[in-house]
Image (cartoon, rainbow, N blue to C red):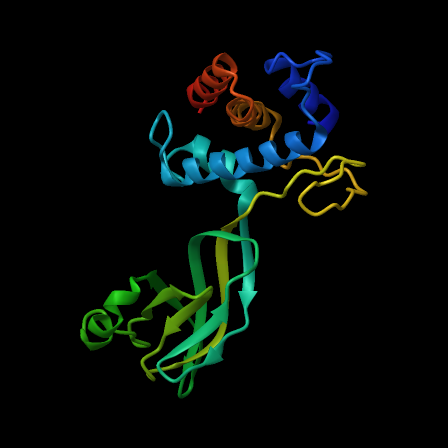
Length: 232
């Protein structure tokens, strides 16, 4: 959906289309509210806090709606004795999985099954014979800490390569010529929303409720919130 159409729809639902009063909505407000709405909508769908309580990949609709945000990126990992560590990408939003290929002695490129574990349980998992990293069984675990992925080896094997699959942050829309009051920088390009038009319609209602709350417009706030949830 083009940003010009998106802006018109938002103003229309706020009853501010050509109103010419002190509550006119400026372009930067539309951009900020829509980008905020994208993140809120995405987090709600991933976690399952929505009208139908469906989370990440719990239905075909969730798989279809969120697939555009799935991304795989190679991890440059370094050996830290007990584990290998790699930096999380800057646009990271939520964990999906990590693919690891390991080697030991004469065996190379063994694909490991990696489970995401809690940092508090690392010592317990390393001590437990049934859960500790094992090249023989092709299983290990990983933790997230300080924006790094730590894949544990317990000095049992080496890691050849690793790749992180994750949900990334939605791309922020930009309206060309619009000046961001927070930075004072003018957008030189037009960046449209990457979601399908039917999802954009839902996010528009989400953005309308945010803007309506900012200008204390109760009716528009209620309508935007209820419509966004009803169409999830």
